[in-house]
Every structure is written in structure tokens, then in C-alpha cells.
Image (cartoon, rainbow, N blue to C red; front, side, top):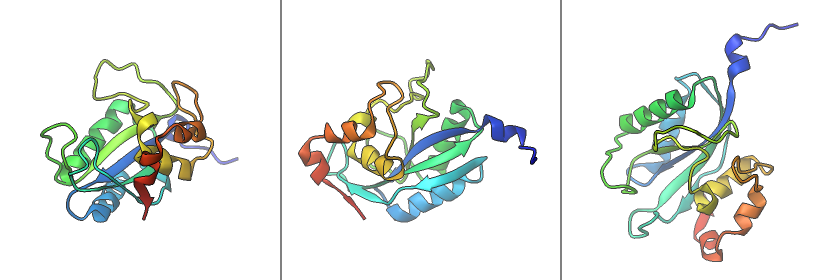
Length: 173
């Protein structure tokens, strides 16, 4: 019998959304994935790249987004700090909310839990994931049986509730 590392037993399955709409977008995403692996984070699955309009201002440069399924023993707060650090290392400037950025990393789902943190920057599942084509479509690509941790609605129903224009405005690249 192989003895498991104690941290393996504590490992959680987490889905992260990674996006970029400034600079070399694909490279920014690849660098973010590489950097995540330097922090006790094992990447299990990666979606394709999806290009979508910038939200909420479609006049901003288009985004490229992916979803990654990871395994980590980091707490939600530790993971958030690492995500913010990587965003900063990739040149993200925190100015106006939803402004263009070189890198954006969001915790979409942390081990199917619902956060109870008072920190409004740490909310999972991600508040708006049910309305976001750039989250739902890549998430469906890597886990067709995923269910929303709070509402328990499966991803197929969530996608089918998107407006037809939202479905037409995103493309896998």
C-alpha cells in the first residue's frame, strides 16, 4: 500500500477562470498557468481558449478566457493572495472595476463550497458565473456534470438559460 502525502488528503478541487484582454493575451494566460504551478497547485484540466466581448464595455479589447481545474491544499484566502500576486506580476493595474487588464484570475468554484468570508473580494462560487458565457462554456468543456455549489443547478441548464446573443458572441479559438 502506498502511503499518501498528508497534504494530498487535504487537497481540494478548484476551478479558476483566467482571462486577459491586454498585451499578448495567450501568452499572459500561459504564464499565469505556469506561475500557479509554483505554489502547491496542480493543474488537472485546461479548457480551450475562448474569445468574447469585454464585459461590461464591449468597446474595450476582446478577452481570451479559459477555465482550469486544479488541485490544491491552499486555503481560499491563500489561493486568492497567490492569484492576486500573479496578476500583479503579469502587469495588472488595479484601477476602475472591469477595466482592461493583462491578467484576471477568479476563483469560480472552491471545492463545491459556498464562501462565508466577510471579505467581499473572496466570494465563491463566483457571484456572476451563471450569467457569464466566458465561464460557463469553458467550464462545460472540462466538466459536463458540474453543478452550481449554491443553487445545485447543472451546467447544461445554466448554459441554456443564457441569451442567444451571449451564446453567439463567444467563440472557441
